Length: 178
Image (cartoon, rainbow, N blue to C red):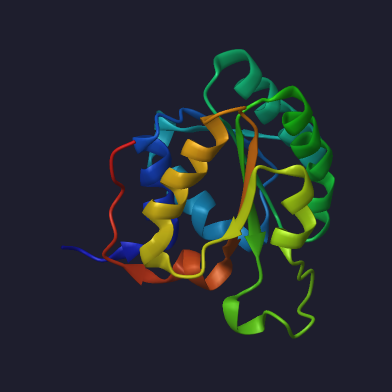
């Protein structure tokens, strides 16, 4: 098996889940994902936005209109806070959505790192599930669960935090089936 990165596995998982479009404001906290999205060409179209709130609302609308989770990427800190209104709307409207948020490196957590936020606590009350990928080998498991939770029962938003070092970490993990 060839090693790849957490970010590339994440994008492969999005493809395995049938995602064709993602919305977001490009940010430095998830540059590895942006590179991986570029590498897959037009198989996943990234719709760049000027504001994270707009990106989250577009993902919410996608979920509402298609029944498939709208995918959104935002950077950490204020980017995540700006996206919160779209997450809340997705919860209220029962729209499936998966919001991926850039996060500080795992070794910097709990040290008041620049724009560090506990996303489980921040989004927990307004999302069906808020989690963080803490190891690159768990990317397929968590992405599959995020899509399943977003669509199961009463549909709604799921938030997944992506630490920078996890995105850049080598892994032998592979995208699995839906």
